[in-house]
Image 1 (cartoon, each protein chain N blue to C red):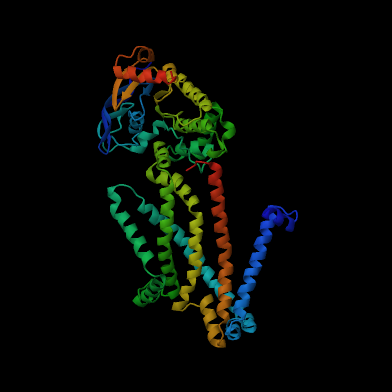
Image 2 (cartoon, each protein chain N blue to C red):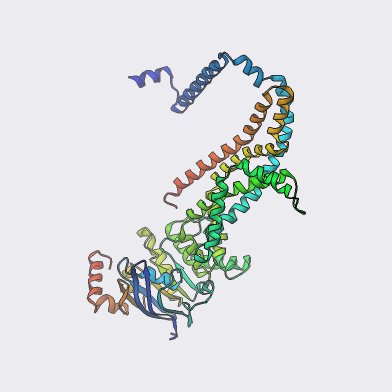
Length: 279
Length: 250
């Protein structure tokens, strides 16, 4: 009865079209209510003036966007080092046998320690501390050392992602490689690591997104990146709109990464289904 | 037939934790000889093969391949494995490589052949075993029988002195078993020295020069297939074969 009535209302629509319509209607309804609640709130006129000022926005946006170029540079440089360094740590941690115990222990201490320490603390310690040592031949730029801090911290996370990937490759793959006469390192390089990396691409991208946001932390020791530029504009205009501009820029950059991660996840899930029992 | 032994095992022992899986195995395999290991699951057939290939270290005893003691301290394990081909029950092809890449990896990286040379040699082997059309396919595009044939070719590409086959048809659908067995038969006819752990009794009777019956880590009885299958002397062998016959597998 119920189904019959609904199908009469929606005419001859297919079930796909029907669910799209339902999703659309409920989304529009939800956001209409949300906007109404916010704009009818007693403090809205003040908030609107302080955060969503059109003139301030159009003035601040280009400046913040220019400053964001520094975030991108930090992100790209750091990412290259993180991907390489983390892989080294993960491989060291997966070395078998009692001989390598000290190296394994060192890798474990590294990942435990640097996942535990707040990023902002390490940025302050390295960014202010190392240049103050006055060592010759060592860069004195706070920016360089803040980037190093990001590399150190994120390598600890990414190493764990790699390690999960390495451990997910079945030992029979290593046995097959070794039985051909490949050495342990050749087996790792040509058989185990390539499979491991393929499996962890989605979680790696997830960490990329985290890193992209955390480049803003570098502002706190001086370099003028997007967040710091927004701060400067805010103090010049006594208006918070530049922060909104910075937020939009960060989000615009991370959303494609997030979508890509989801798409890759979905694709690998489908592949596993197609492959059936493949490990 | 050359009389010099290709493989010699002397009093080989192997335990996993407290459980002794191999309890003093003595075995000698001549060049060009085909030896089939039969016995119930868990009798130690697979472990024995894995020990010969040094995938599993042995606890006591000695193993010689082509006159060289492979269990001697300080030997180059990688060097020794290059001369011993092993094929596993579960194929263990490298899923991220094409068929040709799978079979040229060993020659290129372990034998240091250049890419073209390894590819030429690999293609020749693929042609010989009717897999040439599959050279650029990834393993998940192949049937189980084709995958296992590729795995055999991968081991052959190293030009081993001896091949160890570990239940290579056990993971296959019944209709795919024959194509793999015919490859093994061809190897035997070509004079390849082989040690084959198998549940295919008919095949063992047909192809083996010698059949060895393993029971709880002990090599209980060995002899030509006619003798083992028709008139086994050990009561445990008789019992095992009767069970096999009752299940209709011989």
